[in-house]
Length: 233
Image (cartoon, rainbow, N blue to C red; front, top):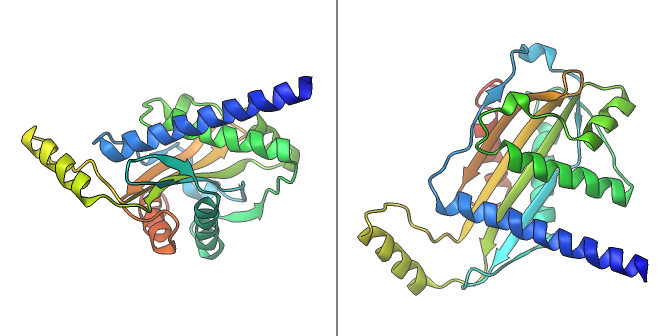
């Protein structure tokens, strides 16, 4: 009975966390706020070498015409594949190894830490003071490596469209003096980190958001053009 209770509690907390992430994504899409972009430590880029790639974390939602969303495993997997496709062929960052996390509980911890780091870093003016999450730091230390690459992808794609709703929302916004249309058929964001285990801080951070399908390769390629713009260009 205790095991069942713990399992139910974990499921509830996971659901709450996913809804929180989804709410953050909707704020990104429906507001004009901008994340702190292009943060770089004082390290010269040639010193950031032998970078370990952590598992890519992605939460892509499917939306219906009433803006009800649920996390889509298939869309999230497509997003991960697109990111990995890009990283496999890129040469800007010296990625030398993938950190494989086969243990389910450990992978869940890593995933939650990457999600949490993305939330913390967004629009945070003190990027240099954010420490590396414990599990991620420990995995780098076990490998005897200094730098780790973390990527969190988030977004949604609308399967059921309601153009009348879109028109009405846009009209209301225009009447209120706003120029932003609050209705999207799809939206995509990516946060990229390189963490420094030796200094226990973030060596590089950038964030990209575009109105494209997050499960498409062309969307991911466009993200990385922006993510690499500073430091690796």
